[in-house]
Image 1: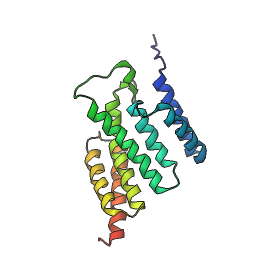
Image 2: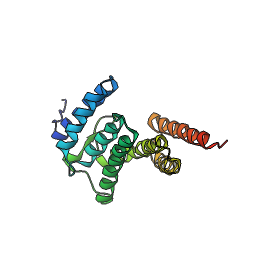
Image 3: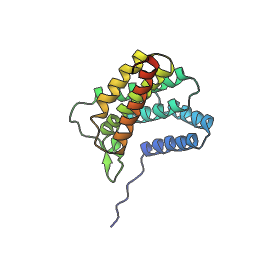
Image 4: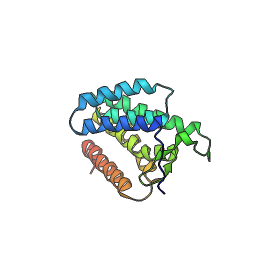
Length: 178
């Protein structure tokens, strides 16, 4: 017998974020930004940290100004760090906090947020590089490199490592480092 999982309001938020991401990837950056912005205000500053992190992470990609992109990436990091520091170690997820993993079964939001850290730090490093702040970019790259090691082996981890290495080479080339 097949078990059906009930949709929750959280699922709806993630679905709407996903729809905005699809609009952005299809080339409608402005509409994606508008939808994410409306959803950001709907979620609010006290809303679910996983939702705020996810939304801000993707909202950064829709920005035209690198300073705005940095602001959104920092909001994503703040949401992720706030959740991690609030949750006592070993605390089990409540039913409303379950997330869908890459495979079947629920996924604790802390695990999902931890998977964001290397990408968040990498994005912030790229933002700082675009703003000609190489020292800040290098500091974020060190954090990205440290946090990527906590991920399980796989394509996601390797893709992040490769992107970290590419940005490091770009920063080293800009500084004249061989």
